[in-house]
Image (cartoon, rainbow, N blue to C red; front, side, top):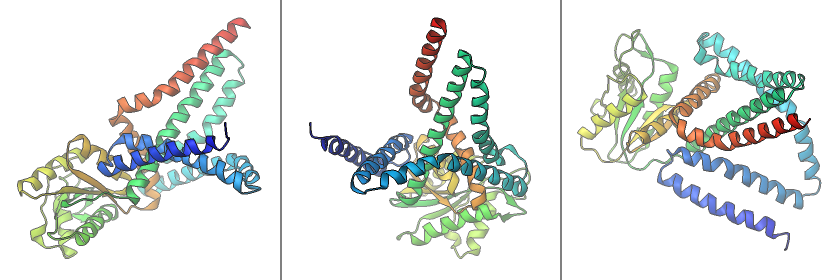
Length: 344
C-alpha cells in the first residue's frame, strides 16, 4: 500500500471531525462534549502537521529532538511560574485556600516526580504499582486541565452571540457600595456588548444580592456604576436577590422574560469564570451565551484552577467516563505487576 495513504487517510478523518466540531460548536458552544472532542482533534492536527513538516523541511526533526530534550526545563519553568503566582496571590489576596491553588499546583508539579522516584526506590511490586497509579492520576488531571483551558480560549476567541435580549452582568463583592476592579471588568464588558448591539438595544441586568459585609445589594451598586457610564436608567433592570451563579442566571432570566423580550441572554462574568457560567446556563435550560470581562493577569491562574475543580464537580459522570481508559490501563498494569511478582 502506498505510504502516502497513511498521511492522507488520517487527514481526511481529521477534516471530517473538525467539521463535526464546528457544526456542534455553532449550534451550542456550552457543551462539555465539545471540549472533549476538541482536545484530541488539536493533538491529532499538531501530530499530523509535525509529520508533514519533518518530511518537507530538512533538519526540522533535529529541532524537534532538541525541543524534546528541553522538556524537563520547560516543566521546571511551568512549576516555577505556578509557585510564583501562588506567592503573588498570597500577598495580594490573602492566604485563603481558594487563592493558593496555583501555589499548591506548582508544588505538586515539582513534588510528584520526587515522590515517584522515592517510591520506586523501595523496589517492590506495590511500590511500582503506587507510582504508576500516581503517574496516571496526574496524567488525567493534566489532560482535564489542558482540555478546559483550550476550550475556554476557543470560546473567548470565537464567541457565539445571536440576538441578545439582555446583557446579564453577574455580581461580585462590592466595598462600601463601590465596584471593585474585578467587578468593573465585568461591567465594562457588559457595556461594550450593549453599545455594539444592534437596535433594539438589549436590557442591562446587573445581578447580585447583598452579602453580609456589603452595605447594599451588588445589583444596586452595579446599576449605579452603569448609570455613571451613561447607560439610560430605562435600559437597566436590577436583580438584587441572587446569592450564587445559578440564582444570578435563574432570577435574571425570569425578570427579562417578564418583559416579553425576544432573544438570548448575554451572560457577562470574569474571563476565568465564563466557561463554567456557560455550562451552568445550559444545565438550567436557558437560551444564553457567556462572555468574559477583563481580569488582572495575576488573578487568573488560581481562579481558573478553582473553576476547573468546580466543573469536574458539576460533571462527575462525564469526568468518570473520561477516567475509564486511564483506569483500564492502571488495572492492566497492576495485573501484570502482580503476575510478574508471583512468577519471580
